[in-house]
Image (cartoon, rainbow, N blue to C red):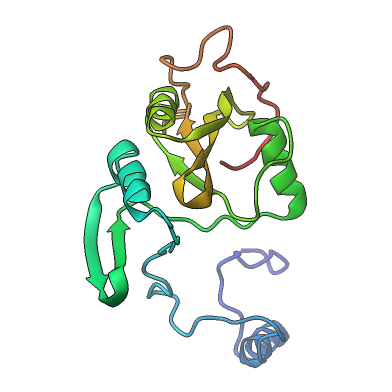
Length: 202
């Protein structure tokens, strides 16, 4: 190697290197105010997301989400004073945090107007059209029919029991990136089709 050739990118810096000293000082410096680093990043900080919903008509809410939507019952408990709770398995859980502009965007795409409360619950299914029809028959009110979104999902919006506004969505792209031909046609899907032109969430 010529004397003026740069060292390979993965070459260790000399022990007295200023760059090494700077990186060590950075590693030893306290985290900036407002940041909360985990002590052990290999262990999950949260093991489960559990959404607790108060339902005045408990039996109707359980029947809707367990029997009509199809969420398996994990456990049920009762206590004094007619206290009752049923825990349903809703699959993989995520917490989607949107700013007001994003919330307005999703409403415009899925519904065409601003209707969502601060908290909305979204369920991914294999067939949005069939699931939506089943839930409407079970008592949900349709806010917007199945609509193809710019990010290639088929979404409907419903008012459900327990005062929840819910989105039913189906991913139209398979994991390999190919469109699901059963749902994406030349004329699009649903009563309100949006042309794919950007990113978004469910």
